[in-house]
Each structure stands twice: as structure tokens, then as C-alpha cells.
Amino acid sequence: MLTQNPDDSIFNQLEAFGHKKVVFCSDPDTGLKAIIAVHDTTLGPALGGTRMWAYKNEVDALQDVLRLSKSMTYKSAIAGLNLGGGKAVIIGDSRKDKTEALLRKFGRFIKNLNGEFITAVDVGTNPRDMEYIRMETQHVMGVPESIGGSGDPTPIAALGVFMGIKACVKELYGNDNITGKTIIVQGIGHVGENLVKLLRDENAKVYISDINEELLGQIAKKYGAQAVSNNSIFDIDADIYAPCALGATVNTQTISKLKCGIIAGSANNQLQDETVHGQMLLEKGILFAPDYVINAGGIINCYSELMGFSKKRTMQLTENIYEATRNVLKLSKAENISTVVAANKIAEKRIADIKKVKSTY
Ligand SMILES: NC(=O)c1ccc[n+]([C@@H]2O[C@H](COP(=O)([O-])OP(=O)(O)OC[C@H]3O[C@@H](n4cnc5c(N)ncnc54)[C@H](O)[C@@H]3O)[C@@H](O)[C@H]2O)c1
Image (cartoon, rainbow, N blue to C red):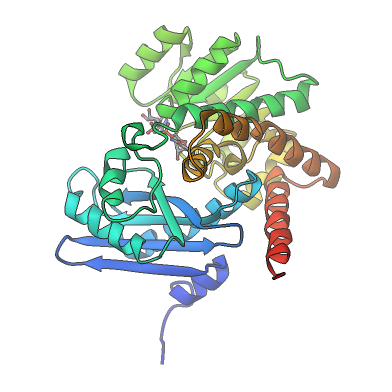
């Protein structure tokens, strides 16, 4: 008889998240400990990055992969892609534990899924790692351009966020002109820097913050942005807050301080609690662009690679994020529901509709 705490039970968690399949990959020879989660494949193969992280324990790793893979289902659905949602985590320190053998063994596990899961880069992995995985399976995207891949997806990810910001500006101000708007970009790494460039090209006033002081100085000088300390960003009277670093920066404490009318950035899971804080933002009248709607540029790039990469098509699909965001904002307004609930409804409807289409032989 199973004597498990119901909250820790793997099967209870799979049922709660609605997962199709979870694969535990163990290989003592290479030290590989990984979990691949296939959430939903109604729209197509489950595509999602592989994250390598030194999780405190296996329960945390499982929860992370279940949560992330489910959000990939929604992200691809709302972006109009024919992809399902999946994600993988490798348990370990990416700076110390990563070896060619470990990655290639992991590639073998992906190969055994026969295309049901396709991976790409995520936190702790890079295009070079994808090359090793590619040595064992074709089911990997985001490999370098030099070997036929789509290369660095971050300018595309930033373009998607920029489109999402414009859609919110249109909703609030009646036109989508960014010129003269004041924007705080928190985190000026790969996506953040590209976003700062796009915003400055349209003459927005940009404040930037990052824990990396050296980078902060460089980016401020390069684009004519104003560097601010991380502690003071919520005191700035800005039009838009663009979180591009970590998740959960939008919480009860920060919402009470925020003076902006729009939150739109690249970071995954910006709301500490989707239900509570989505509703709180609605009540405070702050437009929130759900992160999975506007940060879909990276997955669009991978999708394009899967279909035979075309830069033009990738740009078109990414520019569609403007319309996707507008639709979410319209539904949120029409039904007086949070933008997160609205986005989920749109994504779920597309999946349900296509499921019916596919049921006909
Ligand atoms: N790279 C992509 O294509 C992509 C796609 C979708 C979503 N995202 C998400 O966007 C975010 C940024 O991705 P990235 O690829 O630019 O990552 P990155 O690691 O290149 O940049 C993150 C930046 O945030 C800074 N940072 C970390 N903690 C911070 C803190 N507490 N306050 C301020 N700055 C802090 C880091 O120093 C770094 O410069 C992540 O949440 C990522 O999951 C990225």
C-alpha cells in the first residue's frame, strides 16, 4: 500500500497538472539525473528547453519541470504554433557537472521518445550543449547557425516583448507610440539588452537595473539609458515596468509600491501567485502582459527552425505577439477578468478546438 503524503505523490501531481507523460532519466556512469515532462501534445510535439540546475532536492526538480512544461503548452498555444508543451531538467551544477557524455546520454533518452519531446536551451544550457545532444538525436533545436540551426534567439525574444509592450501602450494611450514613455528594464542580460536597444531606438526614456554593476555601466553608456539601483526601481515614477531578470518580482509588496500603468517583460512567472496577484493588478488598474504571451519569441525561433528556418517567417510570427496581446487585453476588459485568466482561456480554447479537429479521421 502507498503511504505517501498526498502533496508529494508523483501521480497526484501529474493529475493536478494534467501531464501526459514524465520520464525519469538515470545513468550512474555519467552521473545523469534528469526529468523530462511532456505536458500536452494536442497541438504537436512537446517542445521546451532543458534546464540544468543544482536543485536542493528531487521534489523541487519535479515541481519545476511540471510547472515549466505546463506553461510551455500555453505559450505555444497562444502564439498559434503547432507545438505541445514540454520541459526537461537535469539535476546538477552546470559549471561543474556538465560533460559531453552526460549530455549525449541525455540525448539518448530524448531519442527514445521518438519525437514526442523536442528540446532547446534554457537556464544552465547553451547551444554547444545542444550540439552534443544533436549527436544522439535530431529532436533538438537552437543549435548554432554554423550547423544549420537558428542561432541566438534572444533578439527575437526581445522583439516579442517589445511587441507586447506596444500592444499595452496602445490599450492605455490609444496609440502604440513608445517615444517619450518612461520604462524600467530590470535585468539587462541577453533579452534585456536587446529590449533596451529597441526601446532607445524609438526614443523611450529607459531606466535599467541589474545586480551586475559592470554590465549596468556598459549598457547605460552604450544605449544612453539611466542606471538605477535595484532597490529603488519601485520608487521610480515610470509608465512601464519590464521585468527581464527573475520571476516573482510582482508580489503584494511590490504591487503596493508600483506607480506604472503597465507591466510587460520577458521574465518567466513574474507574478508570485498568478491568481492572487493577477486579480490585484486588475483591481489596481495596472495592465499586465502575461509573460508567456509576450516572451514567446524564443519558442517561435525554435518552431521556425523545426519547420525549416526562415528569418522572415520568424519575424512575422513574433510580430503577431502584438495581436495576441491585444486579444488578451480585450478579453480581460470585456469579462472583467485578470489578463492571466484571459490568456489561459484563449490558450485552452485553441487546444480544445484543435483536439476536436484532430478527432476526425
Ligand atoms: N533568452 C530567451 O530567449 C528567453 C525567452 C523567454 C523568456 N526568457 C526569460 O527572460 C529572463 C531573462 O533571460 P536572459 O536570457 O536575458 O537571461 P540572462 O541570464 O542573460 O540575463 C538575466 C540578467 O538579470 C540579472 N539579474 C539577476 N538577478 C537579478 C536581480 N535580482 N535584479 C536585477 N537583475 C538581476 C543578471 O545579472 C542578468 O544580467 C529570464 O527570466 C528568462 O527565463 C528568456
